Image 1 (cartoon, one colour):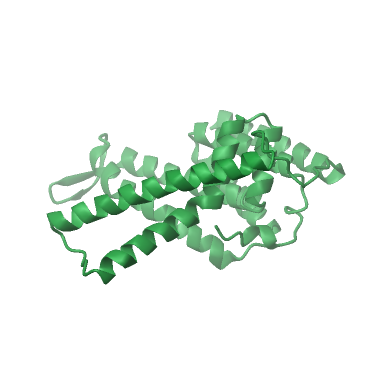
Image 2 (spheres, helix red, strand yellow):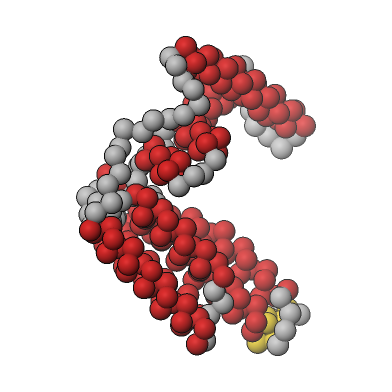
Length: 250
């Protein structure tokens, strides 16, 4: 099962109503996706860093996740500035680095880090069952919520099954190489994992139906909207209005 380090803390953010946190994360992420101003993106990044500090999360763990995200963004920095077009800013031999391409990459980097920090602070600080209950409360499709929860519950089982099959293949003399036999063996392993996953899914479904499952998960957590949640929503709405004004002025 996935480790939930961030939801095990106790802070002002953790005590907020999960429904308010999910909606705030969605609204801010949607706004950040549409912004095109460095000033707005920079202020948003500062706000999300503040949320992470309020949540009292381990900065080392947060930094590790940011490194993973920025590893993908690095590929964009390798190609976009040289292929974006526009006014040349720097020449590296036959390659022209465009100023517009660098600015686009910088803006995307700031926005991406802000969104990741936002979801780490507001969404990653709740357990997956709680997130599923919140999504159901907000009217998300029940099949989507069930898919999320079942994936969270059983993806480690599928991974363990694949590792078991791979170990069995290695005991029988399989040694991974860059040849057709290796590719064919991995294809057989993937097919066996799919077959066994289907078999397990059918058995789990039958067991749940025998226990009265009707397609609806009933969460144990009770959501209570308190004064602190109202203050959080008001501050969030005011922040969005200020950011929208800053975007309009830019």
